[in-house]
Image (cartoon, rainbow, N blue to C red; front, side):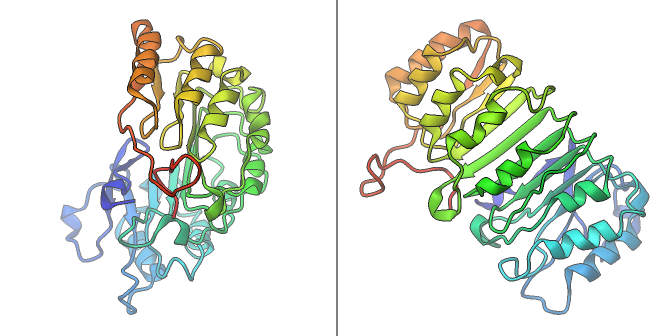
Length: 316
């Protein structure tokens, strides 16, 4: 992931890096932006704990609505339990917090598989009014089943999502959840999710308010597309994202031959391995019905990479 993949907004608020040396008069109001707090791991004089405390002193914490946890040090040595613990400890000061993203690191700082995650549900327990939670990195990620009445959006970006973490998400009670975006990744980087693991989600009974589903960045994208073709959950969706994976003509054919998708407002298939004729078939089947179809980023197989040479957009 390149610097262009850094989070640019959260909760509809523009992302702004907290800078302790900035003039107070130049800082935006606490609730006007999504604050990103990070440190340079090569500057041993500044710990994330000190930077976060400086943030709480400089910006009215009671007005902060969105917080982005950037680099907290040598992320492949220190797990996200370190910054999460500090944010949780400040819950009584961050009384307006509605969105948190954990691990906004790009390749220049750490590959996605190097980001050491932890139990991110500690944030949900500490902040019952949280509406959006985002996580980047699947290594060490745990998600014990949790009950949370306010969470509307959950994003987990990974090069390999542990099946145990997925089961925790699907066993959670999240009655307000409207948007779920999962990057499943590849087995060589810990992505051991298989299609049967998705059954409770695809049945459409776990999250009754779900209207957006992303099952992305998977080496099993064709199998997922085939399962989606008959999944009851599709009827309640407005947007569907199957991008960044190894989708080929066989998966696209299953989608077209399955249940109608014409009720969707958008179908995202970017970074795919479809042939040009299949691209046309998909577009001609859906776009006349008002479905916005993203077929950008046709990828070419790499020789020597698996039996078909297909690859996900993000792995290491």
